[in-house]
Image 1: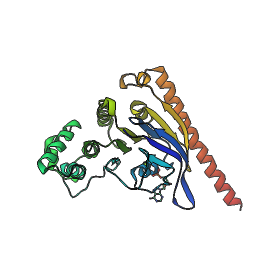
Image 2: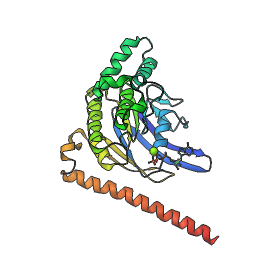
Image 3: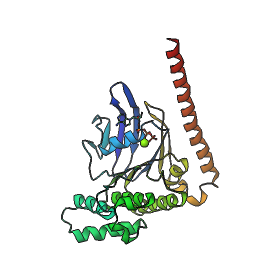
Image 4: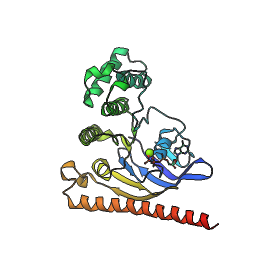
Length: 273
Ligand SMILES: Nc1ncnc2c1ncn2[C@@H]1O[C@H](COP(=O)(O)OP(=O)(O)OP(=O)(O)O)[C@@H](O)[C@H]1O
Ligand SMILES: [Mg+2]
């Protein structure tokens, strides 16, 4: 439910190396943005800036009209490595987020809502009291997603959340996330979702955004209307979707070969000097 404006965003971890060169994009409230791009191009960096985990120039990044000063419960992030506190039970990991968001709630209320969200994500109630180390990767991932959805934030940041899952678990979680997002018809969350899978982007996104090599900028965008949004049933049979898949794959491939050529040229130049 939040507009995000990224306006000529630049970012460097150390002064000499720009990671984000000139990123421009706008997400309207309720958009589901899938970010694609080769490893190291700055996708996680962009998410960390949106989360307020890294500091951006206030003129270059605005969320809901405001600059991003620090992390907020309005912008939870789901990490690829789950991000659960290992010393708390899995259920308490949801509970602690609820406590921060709704300080007046009793412990019982927090437990009740945590169990509801676990159920939404297909997690058995017995798992509530287990430590994260005693859960499978897929279960931990579900807890991470449940925690982010439970606090009902207007903006969700998801960094390759399903990258390490088997195909069936991945498909189930993708469907769950689409259901949770789409059923809030008039007040859908704005979601930024990083993935390496073109098919995952085709399935989930209202908008696909491809970042080029670092120092990166947006090299391609594609918007789906409600009417032409790919569905799981036709993901591999619809000719328009197949054409778009080919195009996206080609763009990403060409960008990576271009990078390999550039690195080779730099190495050769160093050798000559
Ligand atoms: N904390 C950090 N300090 C310094 N450099 C960093 C830090 N985090 C990332 N980088 C560098 O910034 C660049 C972009 O990293 P980032 O993690 O954003 O890429 P990515 O697109 O998410 O890659 P991947 O697809 O592999 O996850 C890389 O060169 C990386 O080494
Ligand atoms: Mg990353």
